[in-house]
Image (cartoon, helix red, strand yellow):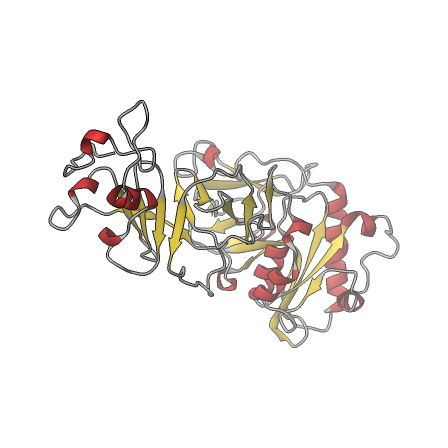
Length: 381
């Protein structure tokens, strides 16, 4: 169920149902649609937000938050209440700006693509705390396989908050003891916890091994199956594939890591000339996005005007030349694109020709016999 809205306008402050009144004007932070408050006093449901029908930029149903009205688990609710009580006990002598459950925090400066994160339980301080930063968040792990724990940690710590993860079932199984001692949790190697004074967002993401936290579609993996290949990845249609080893590649946003798919190795005549530019600052492998180069009739060999495909990468300016048989050259030397020739092009230019016994074409370079000694036109191949 939705627990976050913007107050008074689609760009207003983020609030939870507990921070708003039913008479307030509330808007969905995802789709901008109008929202209302349900549940709470004298009902059997926790107070929550809902999308007003037929709104949300004209279609409330198009928003990922619309219709998500499933009640929160009782265990999760109880452990959140215990967490708030533990935060009050730990920080009773500290000036508190706000404390409670389902409180949104601004993470726009953390490097995240999200504007906010909703804390299961939060104690936010009026002044920065030398141990815990802007505040302490307790997150409850319970039936949240889709929750991106490394990314949440990076966002929260990047915004200046500390974060502590607790197992809901373990805490709920010991109602007498409640939440473990917070300071002990931060000193334990067995409990996930991070503070902005020991970590930054990048360090946190590097500390998590994606294969331990994320499941991938069948046949995809985090380990590059073509580690011996220098990889010339190119974007083509809906996939990214290496020209040399045919490995498929995608950027896996949840883990912030590249993933690979080892495809059937089709043998092709692909040659790389020169060294590929190094991209040490890039988080992901370079992908060529090719753009066709118009043939210059004043300088191009007339044999190759139509039968040769010449392209350049729009980012690294590498050149790619492909002949009619699919033989390819990727050139990083920066030389004139019309000087680049494939193996078939060179054969046909310099071949002494061995003619097929029964057919009129060369078995070495495949050129038609009646065209061998002529200036070839558009149908040269």
